[in-house]
Length: 157
Image (cartoon, rainbow, N blue to C red; front, top):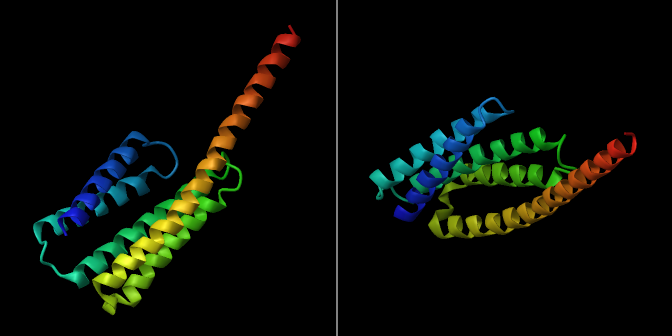
């Protein structure tokens, strides 16, 4: 329970600082909201480690749902900068679905929750790798356009 609480606390602090540093850009308030929620969940888990498997299941469900919504909002915000942001949107949808599934079936127990988190981690990893490739390709395309624009500008002088 302490490891899960520490994860939520660290993840919340990182999301909170990211939201504060990006204030004025897009959906920064969602990062702050997610950071506060995750930090609160981390504090609850550290303060009450014996809260039980059901409490842990609901905490994970809240985390998954809020994170999934943030990922979907990020995909929408990135649609003008990254081609085929589908993978980030897919990750958000999978994360939200995972949270909803836990709320619908909290009786599955801790072992099932661990397996569910493992399956989610695999799906999230695939989606993040695909997104990383897209972002890397977008960076290369931006550099190519910048070089072409610079050469065209120099040719007109």
